[in-house]
Length: 201
Image (cartoon, rainbow, N blue to C red):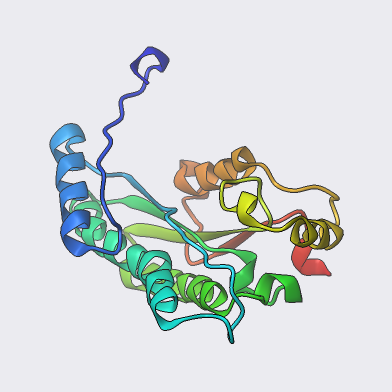
């Protein structure tokens, strides 16, 4: 990325493992000296309804989707507090909201994403006034996870979306960039829904 005027460091790890998270933070600090923005974007899904789900998959979903947000935020927050500022942006889903039935088909995923919204609000209070904490809730977006959905599922979600199309990753990224920027300096504990209007139906 240096040719584009940016520098990046890649650290392989599991966000649900506190040792890996500590290494991630330490490596980032050793390279850049500070952490101004944390985007908690790791997520998984097992496309099973409640009667077909298994405990191990429930645990893994909660570990990655919810515990990962907790661990990464807890590791980074002290750094931001010492610096005197920072932004945390969590990625949830409309599945964590009062969403259409199709968004609530997978109980462990919906529960984990609702948990991210609740955790965001609590962290916003815990870390104010120094750190802004907000959450983005995408609707159906053309990501790798989206590709695991059946064609029937895609048609149903498209029919539920007033704007008549699926979201693009770049559109979610723009919402995250806004919440990570100075333009959102008076916003914390808020939920930004980027779904083409899908929760309206």
